[in-house]
Amino acid sequence: MTTSPADATVPVRRPRPRIRGLDALRGFALCGILVSNIANSILHMQHIDPGPHVPLVPELLHSIVHQRFFPIFSLLFGVSFCFVLEGADNRASRPRLVLVRRLVFLLLLGIGHSLLQPGEALSVYAAAGLVLLLPASWLPAWAVLALGFAVLAVNPSGQVASAGCLLIGYAVGRFGVLDTLERRGRQLAAVLAIGAAVTAVALPMQLSDPLNSGFNTSSAVAGLGTALVYVTGFLLLLRSPLGSVLSRVFEPLGRMALTHYVSATLLVLLADQLLALDESRKWGVMFALAAGIAVVQWVFSRLWLRRFRYGPLEWCWRCVTWWRYVPNLRVAA
Image (cartoon, rainbow, N blue to C red; front, top):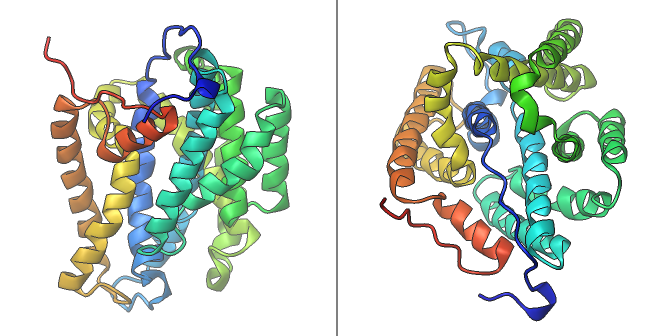
């Protein structure tokens, strides 16, 4: 795997340092997606009557989990695509070819993953990136942001919403907001207040129509509002005395989010063979399974990252993106 003459390198500037708060936020979103996927996409438990002993579980999931974490994941994917293109501008003569390779790898991985988990998100992100984000990358940041909000306005739910959040995340990265997060406490608090207000209006409307919860506009708007609260609230908590604990818990997961997103599907399907969760009422077992998988993945992340710089899938993705072998083993000091 070598770089072709058409993609020859250009003078390299210092690479962008990792933004650890985004890694932690990604890990936090990954945990929420894990719960949502177990109950929804993988085991179809959302279609089951919860029974007389746990009447609030589906309402709880629809209120604080479903449609709340995928917008965050979509936003962060958009940010990461911005950073990759920014790095490619510094390192390659054809920077958008670098992004195309990254998106094609993600598309192929998503197609393979969909055989195990229909409705998975990776192929959606890749398709939206190729169809919308790549052409939009020639636009000014404000135009990309406007396009993202326009896409959300057309349909704030499902795959369309993912595409809108992807564009918004890309624009946020272009504006350079994330490089100055430590100075934006007031702005974060203001956005949190907006998200809370949107949620306060939309969530009662969502819960008043339980049969369509998760499928109607009020659900989508409540989900986006709650996602705003989660993002800004989490980033503000990282600035508090709890910040070091939250970073220690979620940052290792976030640094290997792609590996964990895919491997969680394998672990859940394996567990289902032993626990018979599919279309069941074993809500307690479901939450315990989600917690157990998160713990296993956290331990694996800590051990892996002591020796390697990138997770297994992250390393493969990076090699394809830059079309060369990328050293992964950490060199002892």
